[in-house]
Length: 254
Image 1 (cartoon, rainbow, N blue to C red):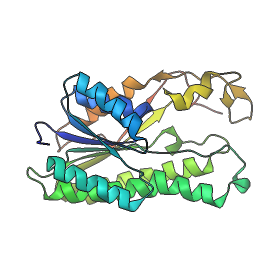
Image 2 (image 1 turned 180 degrees about the horizontal axis):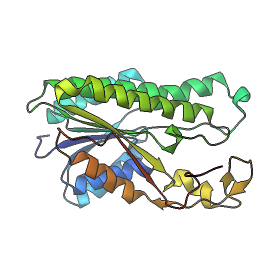
Image 3 (image 1 turned 90 degrees about the vertical axis):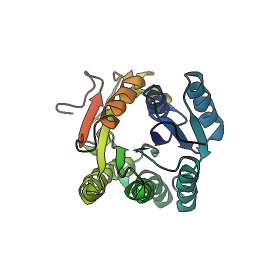
Image 4 (image 1 turned 135 degrees about the vertical axis):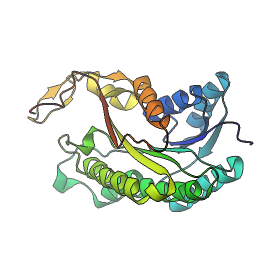
């Protein structure tokens, strides 16, 4: 494929926030590479993007596997020759069990996907961005509100999202010389299939171990926020942005 616009890569692009961001970037004029584990879902998003007159390439990728990440970025380079934006979004959770009961294998899988995979994607994006002409690009990490405060029984997810904050800061600092910006968007309660449980039955577990229905916002607002961050010149960076349903129980005491 020939590059006719800026090139964006979105991981976890098949559903939810990733899908919303990929569509928003396409509408903003980006050619998009869609990465995720489920090719059928990626193909549906690709069709939606093609329908608005933009270009999309779906690449089946499991970001918990280093070889899959290397293959993904090789495809980006061979197909487009450059990369202007990486949205590190792919992530998984774990069943809500007490910390001491979390299986080691579950912990390892969450870390491999949410953190090690993001690190490896960041490495490969930097390699392309620092050597291309014009040089530079932007990396945006999905940190989540869990990068600031945990939910009960979420040690694996929360730990990886706190670690993402360190990755964001280190990437931002280490890549200044290459005209590469790195920022983080911390998202709360976007209306996606993964958050349906927040509005069903008694809702979800709170800090005091009661349950409560929680407000959500439309995922398209996250897409618009990423488009804003991505659209800044490379001498300007949004290091951290929080996008949330205004009345969700985050700011205040649990």
